[in-house]
Image (tube, rainbow, N blue to C red; front, side, top):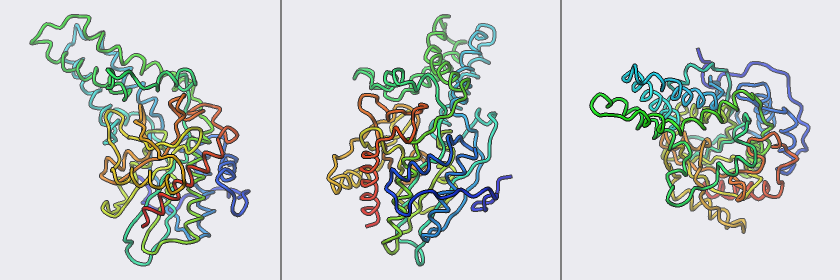
Length: 411
């Protein structure tokens, strides 16, 4: 049974605050990176960062709420399982066509439901771990007229061949214009799987050449191989840019907000768990917190360094854009800081904590940095993603834009 929402965390050794009283955002990043070398979902490192942030912000007037939940920590294992089973059952099609068709249609449904952040089906077989998010809330007198929720994830990711700079640069490169549908990298494997299952189901009414199922299953092969490689390596990265940079920015913004809050505006700084496992911490919050959708704005700060600032266009299989008013507010915030207006960048694969909030009907937007040559943040999901390799100037500029956007949303 899950603990009650807001239940206190179990006691653990205190984390010393080695940071100066009011450091710059790069200083906070280095402080957070010193607390734990890696922060896998459900690990002591993930919790240590969250505890340290709470211990730092509570004396400033923030109210901490711990939100425990359980998560299957391996999104790469889930993808390897789904698309590996596509290939594993295919040789049995000649003898058991309807059973194989049913298996392929089930896999297509299971991956769709996971990709659009609705529910887990096959992934329920993956072992779960206990983890948590922590919310630091600036209270208001009476009911708030507006609520602004900022989110940054505390966990770090697994790595593998697909995240080596050369492979990543070519995987994430935008496709030629005629192949626009490949902008979402998992759309073709999923769509091919769905068509495969439908054709197999109809094979009793039409003649299906033997080579067709093999051709339609080919897009599943690289997905299976690349994700299985991540599972077998079982290596976790430091994750300084992704996403201690967002956590550091939130600490600075929270301390700055405490110096001059806007009356009637409730600000919640959420440090989520299990984002790298598939935005599971944000999904849990979006479904359980019951925040009023008409007065709540959601701002995700994810990887605020090692590239140029962009606004992410969410969606793993198809576009799920942020509200135009939030897009314009973010661009106006950049103008306020005399910085270039951030363009929108379609996420080729994966998602940020904004996606589950958009799915649940909230107004949400994500800020992130993308290196234009790498087509991803530099050192993305790589063992070199350390605090020393973070660009402090870009981190400062991104944080200033985030502050300008926060104050604009606060009115």
